Image (tube, rainbow, N blue to C red; front, side, top):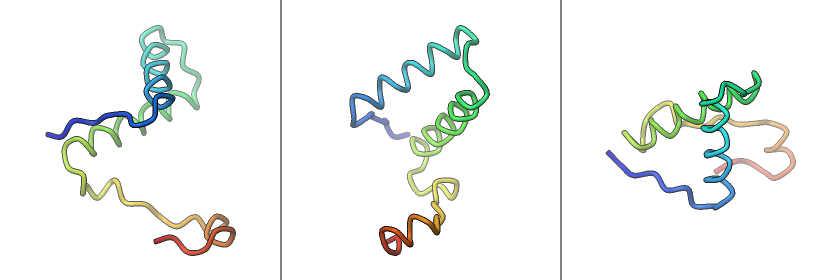
Length: 70
């Protein structure tokens, strides 16, 4: 099992605010979906950094703007 550290202070504050809202049942539907997805990604990352669920996909408008992804 790996330890996940939030590298950017704003990210840790954001995650903490999501956790607090979740505990008080005050998440709206978009925040709830984000909480579920982010929590799943963090769980997968801590268990196996090469987990297939962590693979990315190409977003064409961004590729057109910034070039092909690496």
